[in-house]
Length: 335
Ligand SMILES: Cc1cc2nc3c(=O)[nH]c(=O)nc-3n(C[C@H](O)[C@H](O)[C@H](O)COP(=O)(O)OP(=O)(O)OC[C@H]3O[C@@H](n4cnc5c(N)ncnc54)[C@H](O)[C@@H]3O)c2cc1C
Picture 1 (cartoon, rainbow, N blue to C red):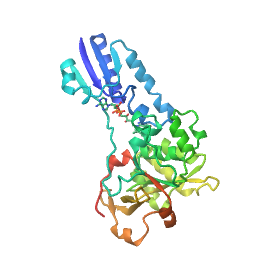
Picture 2 (cartoon, protein in one colour):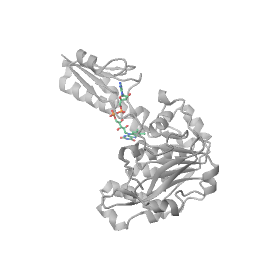
Picture 3 (tube, protein in one colour):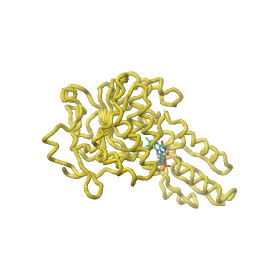
Picture 4 (cartoon, rainbow, N blue to C red):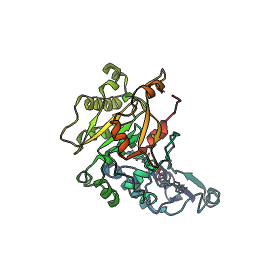
């Protein structure tokens, strides 16, 4: 009989348990340990509450713990309650499947100002993560900036833009639903250091933005390379670019009061504000020969770095998110 400990009950932990159970049958005992009392990791606390079909993958994980010899043990923090060494003394094999739980810093001045919220915190807040129930994100300003060009950024932007009715059928927690319902945010700007071809957004998530009840996407046609350049893209990515091109070709719906603005070639250089976030200064960028974003320092002086009227920048309270998707690929270059 072999004894295995798997630390982490996200997808990696459960697929490992499933594979071990298949390989060893009744010759193995498998304990899946997690620091939280409930399983599934980011499937529970990350994947958006209005994407129930994706969250349904947890039903497959339930089948794994239904197997005799496989148990979930919550409320155990490895490195706190128990050390890896202690586990190694108790089990034949220890597998660490602890994910990547922390937001990365951007490393720019002002990112610690109140009102700048990491995506792990914000996403945890609306998903009922116990560590972030008291986050209380400031939703009383009219603008929010989401930094990053991946699906997590889209999740944050979509959740900020939806009406209460659009959350029907989701499992968003009550405190978030209530706070979002009274949110004053009318414009959500998604900032990306590079251009449309460099996004890490998938067609389904992008397509949803064209069907929001109260918000209309805004994309600048001038940000795209010539359409022939799309031929070189992988089909799924080309589909995403086509959706963005459609957004760019369609004027925002005047009957909808909210806007979801894609601001490409915009590198955040600092967050400013008097005791709280009030504005983000971005530098315009261009792609260098390797496809990386190169700052155009001259643009910081010669033209506004933000697409909203300056009066709004001064007067309104802002909220900004630093998304994990940005953290994963962000390379700051001195302008
Ligand atoms: C906002 C967001 C939206 C996403 N949306 C999608 C989507 O729509 N579709 C999709 O396919 N993917 C999506 N993902 C990605 C997907 O959630 C992750 O790829 C996946 O959850 C990673 O699995 P994992 O098991 O490696 O880590 P996790 O899911 O993070 O699981 C790690 C587990 O380890 C536990 N743990 C960590 N440290 C310890 C410790 N010291 N002791 C004990 N336990 C510990 C954690 O509590 C957690 O339960 C999304 C991610 C995020 C953040």
